[in-house]
Length: 66
Image 1 (cartoon, rainbow, N blue to C red):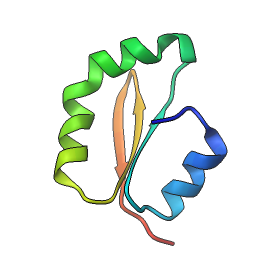
Image 2: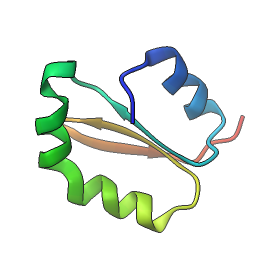
Image 3: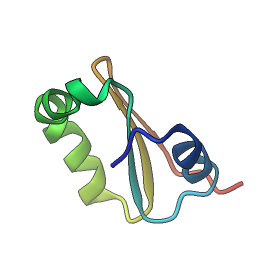
Image 4: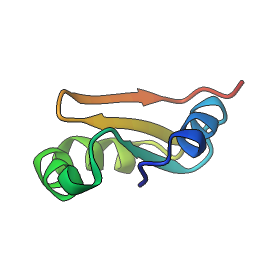
């Protein structure tokens, strides 16, 4: 789980493991995780390799390997 843009973009291109990219300010991260925990936890539990973009608008998943 990170705010790091460069790292997250790299992980999105080559999804191995589980990665959550937080798209919020660091100050808002705890609240975002609390608000969306059921959504992204379900994706983490279902998929072996998944990249998740998490924001207040929802989440997006990627399984790409480029």
